[in-house]
Amino acid sequence: MMAGSAQRVWIIGASAGIGAALSRALAARGAKLVLSARDDAALNALAAECGGAEVAPLDLAQTGDLAALCDRLRASAPFDAIICTAALYDPGRVGDLDPARVEAMVRVNLLGTLDVARLCPPLIRDGGQLVLFGSVAGYIGLPGGQPYSATKAAINNLAETLAVELAPRVDVRLVCPGFVATRLTAKNRFAMPAIVTAEEAAEAVLRGMARRGFEIHFPRRFTLAIKLLRLLPYALSLPLLRRLG
Image 1: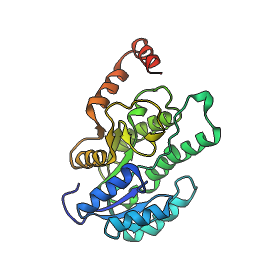
Image 2: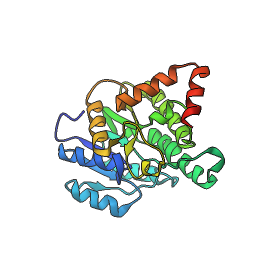
Image 3: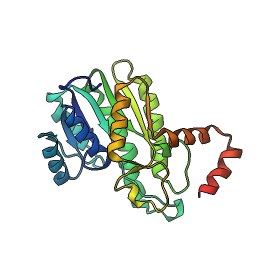
């Protein structure tokens, strides 16, 4: 995908973490960027780092915001890729969760991504890419991950459906990171195996986008272990998960 310097890419969730790292990496490759997130100040600072990228503030939690922005960006479309990294995360056991926070996570992580899947493909050129961020947390129910894990499992499933439904005009990619050092994972109170930096994650995503294949997952020494756990019968996998909990 990143073969030339005229690539036009829209990153949703660009203000921090993997989204910000992707923005910097793509700008260094000469891509023309549109950056979206809720934090206007962070977006403007990032745009300055990225050679004057276009800033398009967006809150996926607000019904109608994405539709209005898509209408505005249609004049400057098509995009070579639209990448949605936006997500909220709060670890904790189900019984301890704040219902309002759960609703916000579902609104942004799941319903927001569904809006992206519904509204953004017409803005992508033929053969361009729609990149959705699921997670290794969506492979199997990990202790303490709810409701984040549930929303990511839904996104994994959604991306599989879209890869069939939108082909061949749109090349749908699913990104399933392991642990990445961001302000979200800083909330975790446990040792995170095989953790990588946001910059390492961004490079892994771009390598995956440049290759054939549907899923981009990393670091493989961790993601392959979780994939294997998912393949086990419940009689074996659930006792192992209880140990993790």
